[in-house]
Length: 155
Image (cartoon, rainbow, N blue to C red; front, side):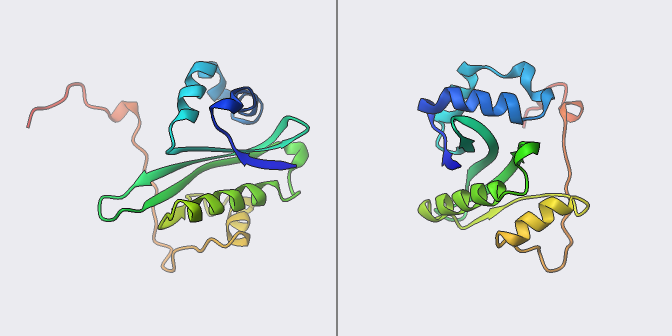
């Protein structure tokens, strides 16, 4: 199993990984031209685990600039492994690859949000060295298009 960050030269593998491993709702908007643009941006991270040229897992993360220091922080946004290849250390290997990238980029931290009820994710993050905030007071909120203003206000 090979785990690596993809770049624009890996466009075919990226398309196949997203097409086969991502939720079906994402696929109608999938296009090679868009993925090539996505992969060309250094702040976008797509790590894929492949076996014999076939994607078996993917990790999506974003490097974010800080306003208060010249260091990035990294949001581990999504991770997925094909059902037939789960519980083989693939997700762990992809996270280790992301952690190495964080070290190389001198990132101040990497973070991920999940549900407490997603015990598989909680165990994965704990086993790869992540720590939960001690007071456990985090709350996640989402703004969707139904919340966008009808017009931009001046001022």
